[in-house]
Image: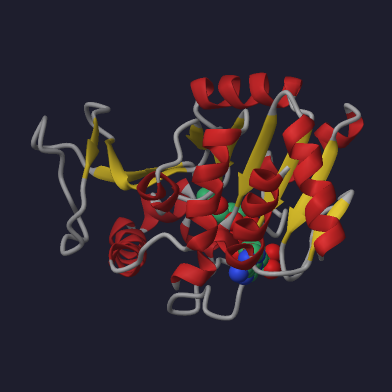
Length: 241
Ligand code: OAD
């Protein structure tokens, strides 16, 4: 572990631009169930079955119930040591964050340069007027837009079968094109485009560092441990160099 921490810290310190890609495992130690883990199912539905436009068109209340369930969990949770360590690393390093997580915890932990490529669970989009708004309450399974009063609201989340927001894709592509080291944290690597980022960096000659108790990526350095354990140690090593 010590040798790997030193090597990873060196790579990150020498890199002129790095990217951290995070997934649900990043928030596991905060108590938020991952999607493909044991507790990831809600009423026996998988994320794929609910997080798609067809499911919402067919039964918007069911999809909202699922999101309200997730929101209720998230509202009671706090960032963990991994979130805080990553936010601190961004103060020392040219390290940008690309997260698939919609739970807002990176922002609460203080991460600055960040793109939430799958959106944010506390945001809604009106299917009538298009307004993006914030909705923290969780007691309404059929919320209507407060701007136009008639439009149906949907979670402002990128669902299966939908494209990432254009400006997010542009920002992420710009970072990836110059990225020398990618830190892949807590993702099962099953959902594109994020699942392809590590291979892209490797093909550009960059380095891949993975942190995941069940590694899922071809990496130069693999920490098969929890991110809340490894990231504070990595931060410490970076500070020491
Ligand atoms: P998954 O649930 O597919 O994968 C979570 C990963 O985190 C697994 O590889 C675990 O081994 C790992 N893990 C668990 N505990 C960990 C810990 N303490 N530290 C580090 N890693 C840990 O979640 P994602 O890969 O994020 O999309 O899923 C990708 C997308 O699929 C999500 O953004 C979501 C989902 O459907 C949408 O909802 C649009």
